[in-house]
Image (cartoon, rainbow over all chains, first blue to last red; front, side, top):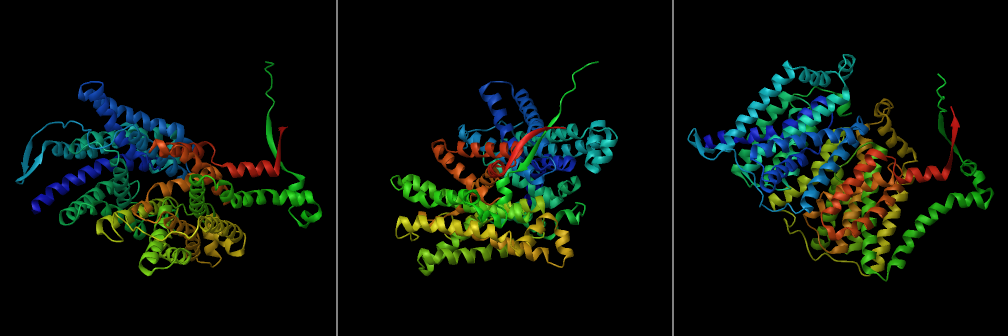
Length: 290
Length: 341
């Protein structure tokens, strides 16, 4: 029983990490809250489904294309919408949230409802970890989650583009003085974040079925992880994923599944009330509260 | 060489003479000035007062008119908080739901008639909302927006998970109004009360302090006034119209459920405010008057409604963030001309 919690809590945490990492990246680099994150997540799932099942492309190609489309959409959202309202945080929230809403409800209107859509798993089968049965897809999920953390860490440390992203996150003005284009970096960050949402979708959706409601859930989970970890802090995102993942799994195994969401919502509210910077955010007392 | 020098021009805006004259006591000097001042106001009030009478042959559309008033109340609440206090509340449905459930409890458990239950629910609901939001009030900007977005969602989930307040079923059989006329005029006068009350308040001394919190809270604090306490009062004032709308609506339809905390109820007031013009309090009402008929026209298309709203909202936020009311009042008060630079 307890090993069960240990293993599945870990998997749940990695899933949360995958969902939240893109959101955290975008906010960390460009201070843009991308509330269309959940919508892009669901959209990638459906695009992959359409390319694979309807257009008959081989699955790896369909997956790659759908991730690419998600990234391009992110860039488009930045150039068309976000660039014009940048700096006005509330307009950013409202605009991206409205876009996400339009995408999700548009999908619902287009008839994508119910549990009849699903994506194939990467491989079938079960392995035993500490005598707990785990199917292959969940192993892939954990592997990908950990891989993504390492990859992003290496990317922001050792590549030119990655370092410009990091520079932007640390000090926008100094970065601009060194010739880093603010707009291009921010667009890149939004694009990358959207691609990560897409990757997360393709690895998590095969565990269940494709539903539109998932978009709202993912958005809230992503916000919860980022808020608890500290908006814009990457180590915070990782730690918060594990804290929330385990607390979610423990609550659900001892209570009703309804409480899964309650845990996240309460985590957001309590964190913001007690310590708005979260675990690892830098204290910016004056920006956060009076 | 010899490339034509582009003649540069800029737009100059100057107040109309009549606007300047009617700002002071000289407004009384002639009918022209008096007319200039009162025509828009009279038109606005008359349109609302005549609405039930004009729409009485079509019961369906008079219902739509009432939905519009409900949305207008929610939008006023959002506009007041966002543009006068500087607190962007993405969870307008929270006020609405709390007001609705309170009134439902008062009516079904204590047997209060609607005309008594609604005002009491408005007050109690506003107290409850303020008390629950109080811990978040020191938050600013995006942090407050996120936390308020979560409140109605949390309420829905809690009611579902703990099976309280009637669970997913909600309450049915709530007493309705005695006649359609009381129903309609009660709501319209309620709307007038909150609209003109808040409009007056923001220009009083108390209102100045509230607006100062938005513009520069540090200076408010430096003047020895508690920022959080001022915000608490402002949130109470803003939750009044929200709770009133919720309480009124559930008596119109005789039931209340977790849909009272639905997302639409948070998004539509924002859309109405952005379209109508924020920071005017009248603008949100105009926005609601445009959005609700539009939404009714799209009723057959199900969730396409929300898509249309969301796109219109994005378009206005990004490209026309001023809103209709601000543009119209500028045209009314000023003339524009191009002058050479």
